[in-house]
Image (cartoon, rainbow, N blue to C red; front, side):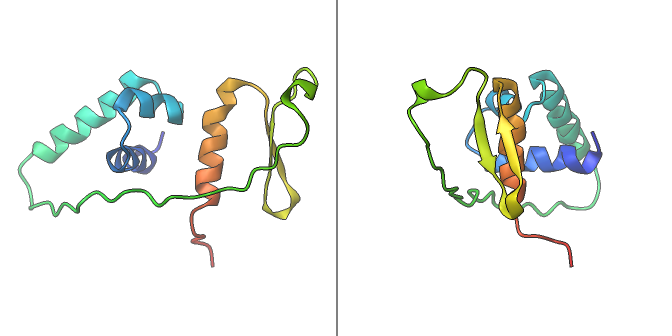
Amino acid sequence: MPAARREALLEEWERSSTSLPEFARLVGVKYATLAGWRAKRQRQRALPGPPVVRREPTAPALQFFEALVEGAPSAAPAGAGLVIELPGGGRAVVSVPGQVPWAVELLRLLGQPSTRQ
């Protein structure tokens, strides 16, 4: 995983109120891997160097997504899952529990302001 992505995940964890093991599970990274990244970053920050300006962690912005439940859950066909209709007409189907972290990340990324020009 690129260093910038590792750093972004650690920053996100610091802003969250979840434990490191729970956060690792939510983002689909093994706890030992995430803990190793954290330890390495702590060692690097402990090295002498220019002063580090630390900012106060802020609570993540609360985001809402509209959900529409069609039919009773018992009426869902076998193998059906959660269908996420995306802007522009795209669809994401979450059919097994292991795909939930990917769906969470997708929704998180879609909720961020675009940096493209």
